[in-house]
Image (cartoon, rainbow over all chains, first blue to last red; front, side, top):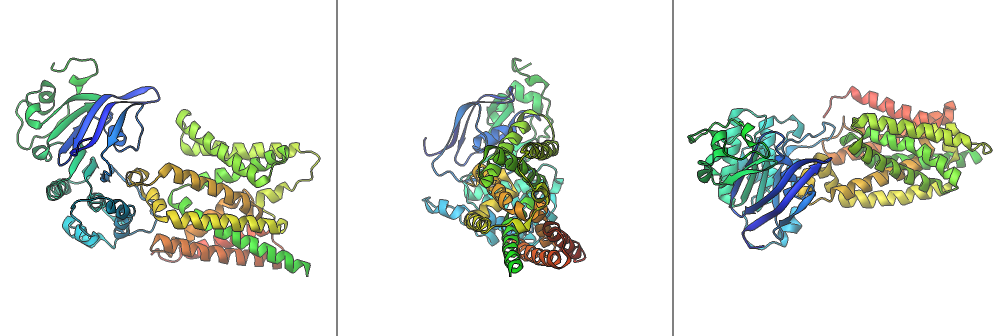
Length: 256
Length: 262
């Protein structure tokens, strides 16, 4: 594996109870590159992420990680039982549990930011001593982002980071993701229903509907018929994303 | 005096059982596994029945049966399209009923079925205490080594896995330890009441604790108090000891409901 390649997935297919979920996916994630994975509900986005993270073993194909790859993961939603007495601060500390010994083996300069500094940067300092179950949706997403970031990841994986939170927090979180990526020069893989704020900064867009419908830079995809059908003929700077996915059924030729 | 000797054995057995249950109990509560614990406890009766029939060591028979039940649960979850609580209910009571049937088939042996169901603290033998001490050492090793990993697993298993926790292995080890603790603690409170020994001290401790470690600490304290009160009641008022311990734990729980949650 060359130095910039972080994850290489080859010929991934997956089935749940004989029902195909993913078919023949090839995907590379490179250092310092932002990849956005889009697709309708049931397209297999979360399944693909789990396979890339090696949480799930695919029915076919293989996934290779770069040696000592440090991943910061932000799951889609997290439910913490109220019987567990835990402050946001302790939640973040627990995220550092297996980090020291792994980072110790890792050469190079990564931006080491302590827990307090991270909380300051993400604007969650005031939340640190609160019970984790009492946080609002947007606050919880920031805490989850902080937990992913304090690991000094080479790759940040975000599964629908703004789902179910209010618009103002959404744009705040996108801005935090973008500024942290710029600062740390890490790779980002993000699942999104909604492309409008991420659009400008994404290097690679992958449109998934069980197979990869189309992929490429936003620029190159502008003229792709399958992409135009999703985002409209002209792509405004803040393209409001409305997913029309009837064109992208299996077996259909792209570009109806 | 003979009675003092019995009481000392009962006290040691009761305290050890409660202490073994405490660390597993907090995780059972945090992970919403109470019904899973109940299912393992009920399957212990089937384990005893099969152990007597096949003339195996009873603790071993209970642990093997628990594992068959765990694997059965996993394959049913994948194939049977029923909700988890339905499956657990089927397995728990299926195992309990099958256990009672198997036990009643051992016609010529005089068996104390009530003792298995509700505990018989006077049947404690010094060798039981040694078993409990050995399992206690296992638990201390397991929880002190994996405490943070277990907390992370409880928070979110996928996040824990990405962060380098061997989730499947820990879950399996925890189920094995739970089966072992049930196997030795059932002499004290019986298969029908053992879940309460797991969850009542933990649930009460939640009212007092601000951190996971405090909750574990208060669980130990409350479990100890429950055993002491329960056995005292049992001794002086001639009550069945297992239910007396559980009633004491319940009393503490109700008392702490008046305290505002921290």
